[in-house]
Length: 298
Image 1 (cartoon, rainbow, N blue to C red):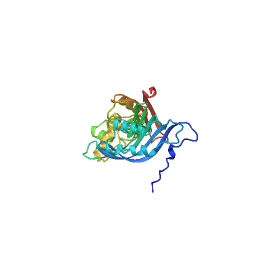
Image 2 (image 1 turned 90 degrees about the vertical axis):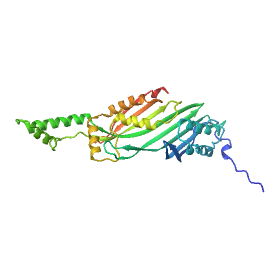
Image 3 (image 1 turned 180 degrees about the horizontal axis):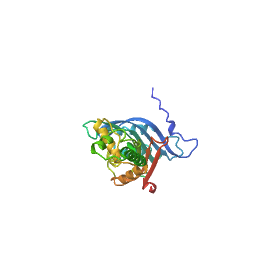
Image 4 (image 1 turned 180 degrees about the vertical axis):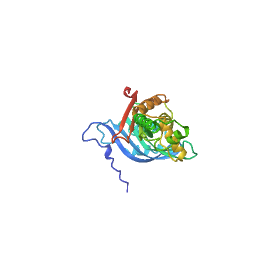
């Protein structure tokens, strides 16, 4: 008895014939390799349906092409080959292919002073497109850091000055008395407000770049900000962090400009969109700044 041929409904003609810009799958669970780590990720994969007479695409072909991502380290070349496989499996139907991969990258970070170290998690996202042999890759990540308000710091210093004048008026200054005062609660009568802040980076890569520069970008951005949040700390590390915040006062505008200038100098990045959010401890709302370079030229 001959086996029955399984019906291929997707190959049937469409009842309403016109093309579709994107057809595919979202949220595909996938292990990917990056920087020696196997990351738990989700992928969105799709192609355009340019043949308006075709009822649908072959989604299983896209799914099977993703197996390449399990065996090789993520790179622009690998992304291009996966997208090319999408199109080759839909010859005559599709002219453009799309792939998005998002997950979390773990990086071990040392403490500021002590020998401790711990893991930090960074959300990462990769979007790749291939259309008419034009290859395009964008990266996204987000960093957490501390920001101390310059205005609040100035107001706090003024209150400390006023308290000093009040406590030492008409008195001869003795070194021991001043030192004791500085170490008392009167010496720090007011403190500036600071907050956990975030920097969202959206980058467009040069099409000839050989690697995905997530780690270099994260390292450079955290160095530019100067007060990245910490992992394991001892009291010496906490004190060093307080010192870094006190010597690194910044508004959200300052942070956005620092990141813009840093990313402009990063090799392989041809455009970026920076968004910084300072979740203020003074207000119930956030302070936000955005900065672009070359973003509107594509």
